Image (cartoon, rainbow, N blue to C red):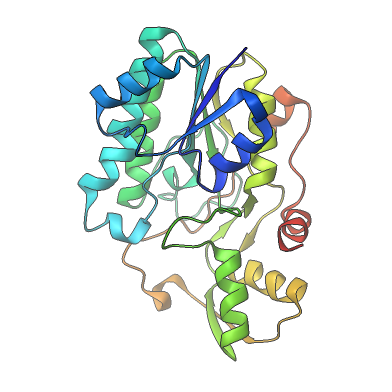
Length: 281
């Protein structure tokens, strides 16, 4: 029987993939397979004997990464390289999850990024993810590298939560909220993404892909839709990224063109508003 090892299999995306794989899926967390330790990782993967590996592990504390770049690179770049090296040596296909934050330097951008567009990250997190992509490509020819955007799912990152859950909580607690309105992206439901990734895993169409729900919005527009669907009525004030003053700069526009994925698996992901309905349900 095929065995798919899902590194980071207890997180937002990994748990959704494991749930859909059933008996074929085996989640491995950091305790079982620390991707920053090449020797321990090799032992864990060799013992598990996977026919495919999916890497959902990421250091994604974007602001914190600015002050501890070594920690971000250890996971997103060198950890990805460790996984890809093992998979390349053992000829095991690898699916590696990356991010829209590999883009952002083009401040005038207003059309979705294709896989052929050159990366231009604006923060440490995005740069570390870009380096990780290159490491996967160099070390494992049988690989799918999949960039996604604005991910939210039921298994939120420990200590971080996700944007939707945070907005629901704050919408109940506060009469007024200020939300950034000059960063445009595509919120993506982890359940929808997991289904698309499994469809891609069923192919041997290796390469770089973009995968998000359809459409786009700002975080302000996303928050407004969360409140509308939840029946919450805080006063929502749009602000600029400069006013928010986060430690790490963010892309002003990071919408991804997913046509390549659609052609490969024969369908596209549904619009982000429809996906949000299911998540909030």
